[in-house]
Length: 427
Length: 151
Image 1 (cartoon, rainbow over the protein chains, first blue to last red):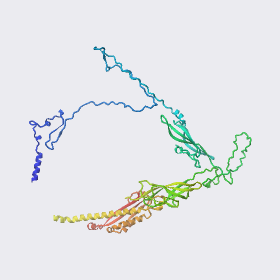
Image 2: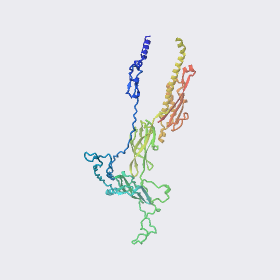
Image 3: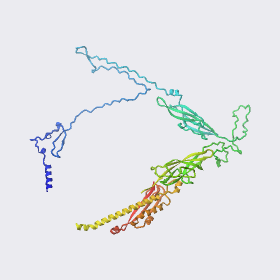
Image 4: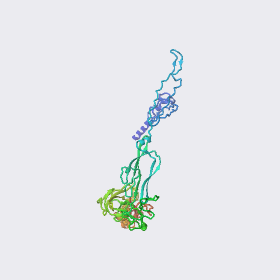
């Protein structure tokens, strides 16, 4: 009961009217709030609070000040750009003297006079504008000529390799154009001669059938950037001839009857001079020269007269990796993680399998469980313990050494992509 | 108070027994599902070496189905006291299919697998003695399905 009485007492105390509410505005001073007029624009005033529910903040009425909207005048900002030296500088004409205006200063006609002299006062003369010395624009043609270059009138378009009889011509095609560039001959390389520009050429330098680089000229191309010539690229113009090898042994072929043998005083005629032209004839020794590779002409052309042309061709050596001694090489395999996979190195020369005399692991994220080099009779025992990223694979590169007939040992790389997988739940 | 307790005691005991039995069934079913998952993972964790040497592709071994059944039975052996059939019988009756090619569609679920997959579906009979007393259901059958692929 005491608790209930205490609670009721506390509630009664809280609900007791506060003195502020008991104030009679006609007889008592109840504070400014009782005669507060918002139009008076009084400062903020907070009524004295006597209890927790009377804490009301009174704010003054808003004051609206009507002011004209500002007018923004946009002026072009000065562009801080350097004036190119080769451009003409615009020098403005001197401004005319200002007309008389009321704002101009006036003076009295005389000291003590009450009359004003409306004549203008001579404004100080503006300083003379001195024109800026402008450097003349450089002449690109003159600069190119001074540097020993010429303006380009023919541009490289493509390389042409044409065979006419026993002659193979390596040339470049050009097109007439005036691209505004200049060029300079920097090197003339001979057949088979290595050039430091070979690796810098814009177009590739081709090779003859025997592997030697073709002859030609290297031109350095320059472009004009407005004030100077800057290097652009190196262009190679090939110009070479290749004669196919003829018969090893010249075959004494009687000249045709229509061709007269050379005499001391040849008769004037349009017939060219007698040149011993090899004519393929049926002879015990054909004019066909077998290439070094030992290839034989195909059976379908065995009956036809063999071509007198024999072009030595480079041997194509390829290497691959198989997963079994008698399996075909593969380019991509899928293996389970941790499984031991044998990698057999295989090689072919012109498509014919040859023995791999030696192989060596070059690169690859692989764990070798055995020697990393060996002969073709030994595989690389490999395993993978990590899984690549989704969609990724590991590349294993092995360098194989094979003996090429007539050339000796040659190294060739074999590569295989390995996708490592691991079992996982699907559902 | 005492009378209320006496009257509600059968109901309380029934609910308690049902909850315990249902929990036990859930535990056995989860352990059997884990057994099926391990069995399919083990089955797919073997590669056909001949196919690997021929094409370089990953194909499950030819005995993947047998491996899945055997390992399913071995994994269920620890639950044999709770099962109404022998683990070997359950594994033998299970539907085990090996999808050797990627993209094959499972006729049971209609799902297409992205890689070679071993799928196992089985019915697991679990003994429920309290359900037999309460609901006349001595055996509760739980469907299991698991599929694993080398990814």
